[in-house]
Image (cartoon, rainbow, N blue to C red; front, side, top):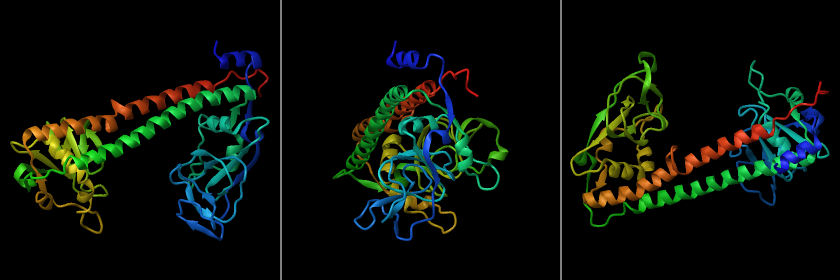
Length: 372
């Protein structure tokens, strides 16, 4: 029997009570107007503006700036009421919440802040659908969550914290490996004494065919339209085998991708290599100058890149053996950092699914029969 099973059997053998969020919080409040004195976009505190301002958004975008005063000084949970509706996070230290944000302060005699934060993940926080979608404070107050004894709450938090810490460690490792990959991708193409020739000498370029989702039949062939991922899938292809695709227009104009399966390219260019040039080698080289390709975009409305300009790019052409050596090194980094079927991305995805499974299981209790 696990420690959690023992605690449940001892402390709540007849089930667990459920309570409305309003009944387990010492305070619930909505964000106010922006302070008069604040520094928008400042990502680090200063002596003049030491207290963070939070608005709606994910962890990366919620920080709005810093101010000289604060509204909350206890550990609290903030919940996005607009935009990223339902996104919640624990905030420690003094801070100021502004509009489109709801703040909860747990009544620690009934529920711990961490347990409340985990419980919010499984109640399905939703906003009203009329007008601008939003989550209101009266709506939030009515959501019910399980309130097991504090000892059980702490054990559940301990278990779930272990899962989140493992995922955080894997994510940090993935970030480090991506930086390492970018470093070696650039370093390996510093080839002294190697001839550089125009891309047109080592590859041919084909233009994608115009197609729309409406005039295609759904299938399993990825349609490459101009983004970083397939736009949709259809039942026909216009290219089979290895190919490099460069997005022609839109926000990702110049984006380079590698394919070795049937595809349908529409708003993009397809590169096929000539004898003596490895497709994977050319792909990795073009990825090493990805930012330069993005910077060749033209046009004020819908930006685009020009095929004739791309074909003038100078490409280093080492021996086939050296090309193969570089590809072997970069293939390993690529699989480790980007392959969703293997490597770190796959392991992170598996850990997240495992965490969600156990989170839902651990936060589902048999209700007491007396529960109204």
